[in-house]
Length: 368
Length: 247
Image (cartoon, rainbow over all chains, first blue to last red; front, side):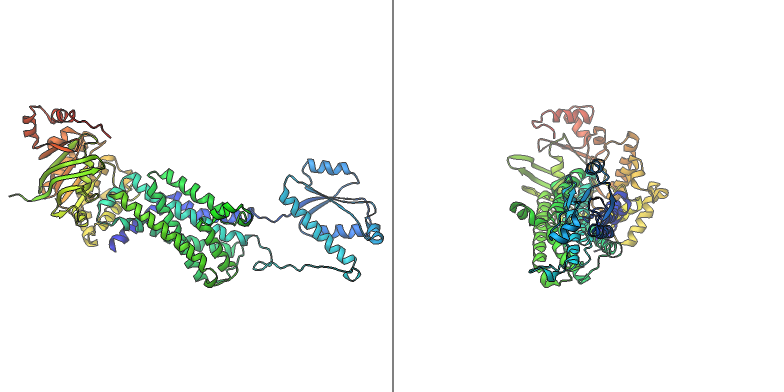
């Protein structure tokens, strides 16, 4: 036990003296949270909209007023000139145009059917679609105001609710993803590099000749990173709650335990990588390419898994962070208990056991 | 009768059809400085790994410090020290922290670590540098410190794998003074080297060629036997018989 403590103490010295490690360890979560929380928002705001109003009647005035009062648009009204619109698009002054024909109001009131034209910048299809949705929503709402439902024979009015996230906070989906990503990078990369570093420096040999058991060497190397990763996990949670206003709905204890399991999964993968390579660069590259990129793609927080071809969905099942992501979402955002996440927990447990078994077996065979 | 701390009999390590170590037999006495020479690929490292408890032999018998290399590897490890050709301390730990760490790993009690550390730093003249990072010390100092750390837990035998690689002649000479002092204190020294002048410093020398022990005697006797002026010529005569190429 004393040997063990001496080892762990030494390992902490390594971590705290290596500025690069510290930066990766604690700088990374902060940067990720800020990036995903603020920079990578999928909400579209402040769209530059040019309105050409050929009608200039009560209805168009009211509708324009509604659009202006929504927070999504920066409205500029152009002269009655269609060339002006093309010009605004080309110069980037406008990303969207709305054109009312000359008799919009009278068509609406007498013909019961009026048209308007929306032109968007299709070079950015996602934004273009979002803009169309916004304007359609505003016109639908307006239409219901001017022609009350009673006058129509049938009418379907969808009442929508976004469960677990009523206010549509975009950070909500990112937090579990960032947690998975950061823990994955920190645990896998740093552990594998720290083991391989000892091999590179020749100190691993010295450790193996010492009475310290080889298995204990691996465990003692992993423990400081386990502790640091838990600290990291708490840091991410604090940032999520106080900076991005994402509440924790479920049991913090359950979240903590599940995260610990995931951290152990990642540590095992890190040890596995360290067994297969002898240089720090290779270890780092393997961790980054082998773990980070699949984590980003297949976890489901950046790209919806449901839209992927079947084969990729199968592949995604092999990625530990995908399961952890589901657990965190369920516990943290939906407030669900263990009875809803036991399956995911079991998968993670299985992966950990497998990775650890292979890592330890490899380590042993390499010795003899 | 002298106490034997290492006894090897027909020790063999085979990798498939390749005999890295082929039936070597020798005995090392307590407090002896035992030189273990051979060209690259002659099987030195493999033999040493077996004796250090890092690898199992394929056949043959060997005991180190009275413990069997097949079954009592853990007991062997407790009773030996090891220093490798690569520098073997942590550069981003201070002199003091390195000593404390290795002392701790070998299970030396804390009070004892403290006592021996003060003593050691004084001997080495490193008291002022105790809180400096090992990475900041000159190579010669590092090697001396590494050797001191390897014998810090008072092992019965210390294995030195090319300990003086890349060190200047003056420091090498000082390093050998430390080895003599350790041997005088009863620690058996098992040393591999490529420097033939160092072979002259050993009590007895073994020369391995192609996995076999081709010569084993005092440097003086070997020179007579091969009618050579120095160990360099002895080594050359033996090494050029080798069939294997270096690694």
